[in-house]
Image 1: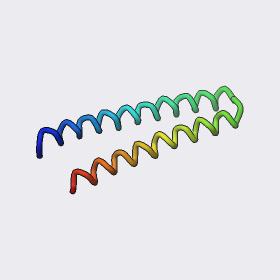
Image 2: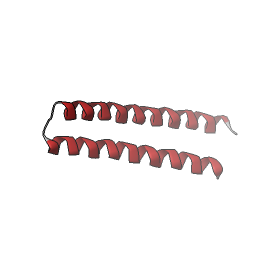
Image 3: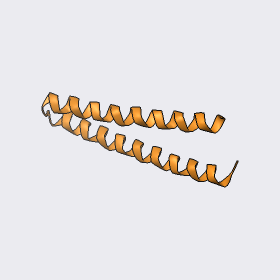
Image 4: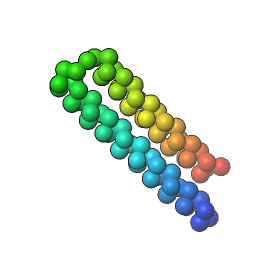
Length: 70
């Protein structure tokens, strides 16, 4: 494995972890919104946003794994 590939993997790993932290913060926010009985439409929008972050994270993770097998 080349040094360049290791650096890319570390960068990808950092990006994935950052995205997971973002999703975690969004989910904590959603929990608070539910406890405060906020508008359901706003809650649904936040759930959609968290889902998008998780979907993007999944795609990035899978792409990084596929590249490492090529």
